[in-house]
Length: 393
Image (tube, rainbow, N blue to C red):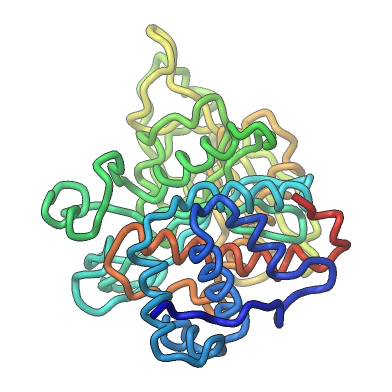
């Protein structure tokens, strides 16, 4: 017997019904029953309080015990392509967020046992502890007031990169090579920026939660793109200023030391901005990165700009940001950094209200299917409050 579930738009927003939204975003799914269960899953994420398990979602929307098994089949087993729905979401977001930037954010999902895809014990600087967890990376399209998640990936390291049996069990494709959160963010942004409807903007990222920022100097090139990434105060840099000509060796220093030593050894620029909650001081200096090779044979290692943000007269550590934006206006850079806070707020909202970390399945496709549905639920709620024709496909 085929499990059925009522269709409807009980959580529809003014301007666009959930049925129309599902048809637009998930119209690429090849079977009608897949689109039906996408509708059910979305309505469950939008209306089920608390933990978003398959059983609770099905009970909230269908009221049939067997519906939970059907949802499980749809998410963990059904072989639908998650890339096309995510592209559809990104196109919709681009129409509503014309002045957008790409911002990456990471989240940690603590797990029990060792069978959840990507899980292993890691030291997480943001928690100050070693925990058994997954690390996910999200790519957000961010305006000055809104952040919409449009792509996701898992950090796959250790055995998840090398153990063939482990990868087969989790159904990880051979083409997925894994790598750090920084690598995943760069590759997602490069793919999104190449879409015909997208415009190229710098990638902004705060990946300090994962502790892998030491890989920035040796990370893969982001094509010809620019990036702005938050680093820890002790991140290694090399001074670039009077007495540090490229032909002369320079001792590695730290981001914090370079900024604090400004005015005694070399120039540090200073600007002030209003963050809405008080004044913010922005200091910046040119630096090089230890171990970074020259871009061209016979050339010199590239020069980056280091930024430090703090509130004068108020306690709290400064934020340090490393960037390729060495010639951009400081006000523009400051506006990009402020958008990262929108992503941090959105990640909390996704975890608390949309089931971001609630998927307990063991498969790589299942995790991506669930994350696609989480993105769709959030985008529906945030993007469909205007006139219907403003979001028509």
